[in-house]
Length: 553
Image (cartoon, rainbow, N blue to C red; front, side):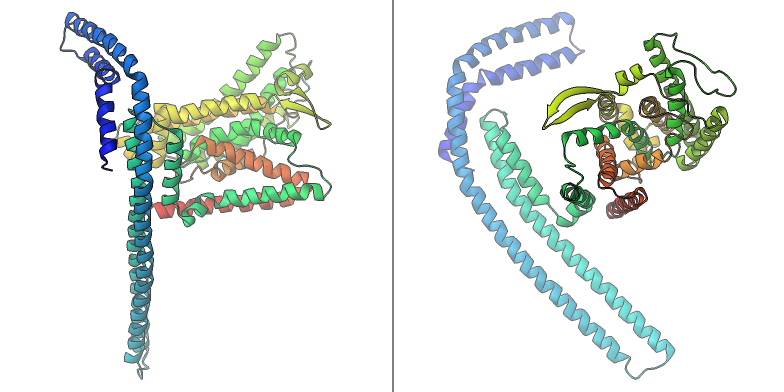
């Protein structure tokens, strides 16, 4: 974009900034470099930094004097840049649109020529074998036709690839015109960004890279689920069941999702490593039974391996809560690490190691408690952790906020931080994507795998502790929870092929599955039919994940 007036603005802005803001920035960078310079003595370094600091103070005075003039010139310069860019971008867009239209016409003609040539070739093949009736001649004819069909598909694929590449190049030219304009404006503002320009740039980049097939592949399942929820919301009042989208119903869905969130966050790490965990439900039962025994009001109604019954009511509430939570976490971590050792050291697939762990815990719990529920926990403690806060009355309904949402939010943040902001999280992705490559690069696959199993055990232990606040715990508590947790992660985009997925996906998956169950129950759909809906969603999610994986390969 060459323009005399705009070039004059740029030159004047440079002169005004040279001894002010630009000098300040340069001197600060020099000070940072001096602090890292090990070749200088402390005295030399301090002397140079002091000299630079004195120069910075002078530059600040110059910057303050020129601030108003710079702001005025920058505003005029950006306005001039926008006026010039409007016509230039429109011209580039029109030129590239014409080029794309020509590419489409050429591509259509190319496809027609390829198909016509292929049809003629097939006719020639058939004609060359006319009158020949031997078995060998028939086989040769079929083979020649098969080769012709294969070459037809190859030619069409090559033509489509060249066409799409050319169209992408034309779209990139259109996008680059706006990128150049934004970069020019940023330079005129001395590097400062503009939110409107950034949003427009993001939108244009998305439009230029948009592919309907990829969009449907990435979001088709979510669109279908969204349509399902909309249908449920519409049908609920018509069927006389009330408003599904009311605030109490939303809070109930979130409350039911809260405890399940812990299980999904735990198993998500194992799925990221291309594994799974079938012991989740038994871990839940283990921690919930321990919690129920410790927080039961009065003497327990069951014994554990012939020991007891106990009465922990003499202990302070805080001590009882700490005991229940810590024991739940310790036991879940112990069994999870037990399965992890076999998977990390002996390369046994987590499906087998966690299946074995599930059976061990199941047998121990039923043998130890004889399958008897441990009873409810103390009402005061239950309300303190798993109760609700009263918010007020809205449209004649009492609005209460579930307390269990708070620990779930904390768990989500902790998991997000581990996955995205720690070296361990980066190593998880590396091991999940390619364990051999990760090992060669210096990452300990054994300890990363063990770390994921231990982390899962911590989440299971916390979730199992909270599970006891929802219902009377027994050896059968948590039956089938592992399937819901795994399904939630897969629906949320965490790939069974390993190395792909985000914590946000697991969170969305849990809410989707919980909301699905709640909606179907709210509409009075038979519980058995609900499994059909869940099964269809799971198979669709895994199928889409497999298709995306094959496309990446």
